[in-house]
Structure formats: C-alpha cells, structure tokens
Length: 502
Image (cartoon, rainbow, N blue to C red; front, side, top):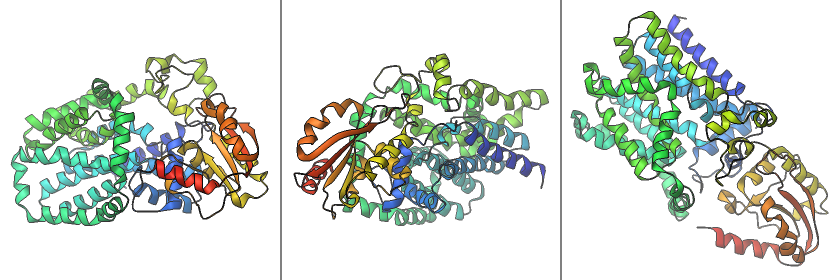
C-alpha cells in the first residue's frame, strides 16, 4: 500500500468514526428517517415525498437487521464515497498528494458531517452531484465516450433519488453553451447518453403519470408552506457556512477556472456555479439544496493552491484551517451533547440561531435535536395500549404526522402498523380490515378536543398515556384508546383519504 492510498483510507476511516462519535447515544433517529425507513415496506417506483432510491436503501437496511447502527452506516458511507470522488477528482486534474490532503480535509470537516448523520435522500444527492461533475471532467480530459454514459447512469440514479439533481443540469447546460465545450452538443454519444438516462428514469415518470403527478402537488405544498418563507439573503448566507473552512479553497478554485491555463477546458464550471446558485436564489430554495455544488470546486481549488504554494509551513496551515474552523461547529452543530448539557450552556447554540424553531420562538434545544427524542417512549406507550385492546386485528392506530407513525412502526415490539393522513401514509391504509377499535395519537396542542370530537363515536374512550420527555418536540403527544365503534370507521377513513389525496 503506497502513501497516497494509506492517507485516503485514513480519511475514510476518520469519516466513519466522526459520523458515529458526533451523535450522543441518548438520541433516537430523526423524524424524517422513520418515514424513509417505512418506505421499505411499500416498495414502488415513486412516493409522494421522494423518488424510489431511498426506499431501496431502506430495504437493504431492513435486510441487515434495521438497527440504528445500520441506519446511520449508509449516510456515512455515501459521505465517505463523496470524499473519495473528490480525492479522485483532484487526481484526475493532475493534483499532487498535498492537493488530495487539502481537499480531503476541506470535505471531511464541513457540513457533510451533519448531513451524513441522517438517513435522508440528501447524502446520495450530494454524492450524485459530485460524481456528475467528476464524470464530466473525466470526459473533457480524455474524450472517451464511456464517461458520457457513466454521466447518464449517475444522472438517472440522482433523479431517482431526489429531483434536485435536475438543477445540476440547469446550471451545466447554459454553461456549456457559453464556452468552447459547446462542441459537446454535436457529439452523437451525448444524445445516446441522454436517451439512456431517460430510459432509466422512465419507470418513475410512468408512476408519476399513473398517480396524477404527486411531485407537483408536493412542490406546490412546499412552495406554499416552506419556500415562501425562505429569505433569499439567508439562502446566500447559508452557502458561506456550509464549507466555512474551505471557503478560501473554493474561491481559489473559482479564480483558477478563469485565470489558470491548465483549467481552461473546465471554464464551464465557473459559469455553472453562478447559474445554479442564481436559479436556486430566484426560486427561494432551501440552503441545503445547493450543498452538492461545492465539493468539486474544492478539488479545483486544492489543485491550484498546491501548484502555487510550496512553503511547507503554509501548506500545513492550509490543511489545518478547516479543522480549526470546525471546532466551534463541533461544540454546537451536532447532537453530541445530552439535552441537559445543552440547556446548561445554551449560548453557543443561541449565537448560531439554532434554538429558534420554525414557530419563530427560542426553545431549550435546537429543533433538529428535539426531533430526535421521545420516539422510543411513544412507541412503547402505543404498544402498551395496543396490547390492552380486545381484538388487535381490528384495531387501527392513527397518528397526526409521519414522524409518529414511522417511529411507532420502527420501534414496535408487537407488529403495530400505524398510519396517518400525512405524507405517503395516506396511501398505506389497509381498508380490507373492518376496524372496530382505534388508538389515536394526537399532538399535544390538539389533545384537549379529542375526547369531545372522537369520544361520542365509540362506546368507551380515554387518554391512556403521553410522551413525558420534556426535551422532545413530541412532548405531550397523547395516546388515546377508543373501543367498540358506533360508526363505520372504514367509511370515515375512506372519506378523509379522498379529501387528503392530491
């Protein structure tokens, strides 16, 4: 094993170690992860919330035991592969060992450490953006058509993971037209590659058509409820924070794309980042949608700096900058401290605005961390209620949101299959059973009216228990038990499904 390979393996091992070390064992999974894990039980070519790739990974996780350790392994793996692709991009650009080390340090000590903690489509999304850029660089350098077809395959995988990858093409296409690389558009293999990509994504497009294009409904809801509140200036500020320790490398890369003769064939990448960020800004995108842009520019910058900086001490400083700037983030950006420790020293979190939730108020914990607490407790209390039911086979467990339903289904010891009218669960009701009893999981702020509204529809009803973890966002979520329905539960559920579907 040569020195370069040994150093690369060191970075990858360190990546995996940090991903696990930066989560305190007292935290559960994040609410979003439970939805994605549940998709393994309902495999399809598409979902309302995401395309199918995440469900395929969830299926593998389930086959490997479905433990939290396995769940966290896969986003860490995708993050390690992203680091590997950046390393290989540096090599493809002719970079030295120092350039590889500098790029590795910048990628390792970045926002990816938080992103790669969560089982969501985002880790694969960033990997696919980085791979797309690597494959395009490889084609420009070698002119071998296999890189174009590789580009098509990665584009298809990225599309089947998260539609966000389309914005990489939105940025690249006009950038190609603005540079001599426009000759690419005369290459018949470009169109062969596009046809291959279209063929690979066609099952998802057919699924979208058959289901009345839920992606448009999802985007409309996203625009009306979330993106409308995104401040364009905040989007741009967030871009500076994601790779804070690598900013000088990214800026060097952008300069080199304009001024460094060796990078002249790759000048389209300078225009691509400007166009992509402009489109994201105009559309009020969430800041993290753009994370996949930056790793390749770290590669460009690292190669250029390695060519221009020869002093050993200065090289050492450059490698250490991402590490030093990561230290403040280590103390606040990760769930590596217990809730009690955070509450005892809230200032680092308050300074970063992390205690401000989407309701506009400051809370005890960052919202993301509070979304990783209370789920085991909720599932155990639903199990207890379920065990007390006279006939479990005709008992419906109905929740208020996908986090509750997904967590119950993940942690249950009794085979409970909870549902909700929220997200993909609206399609997962089993109405072949004639339900007689109901376990209703209600958010704390709506629990007061539950007995009034639902109680008269059953012979008996009572509040069985609630989430008592005061640090959890689900604190106060209540488990109601209703027995012996006086109405047709299935009919009422079917009506509500029809109202909630797009």
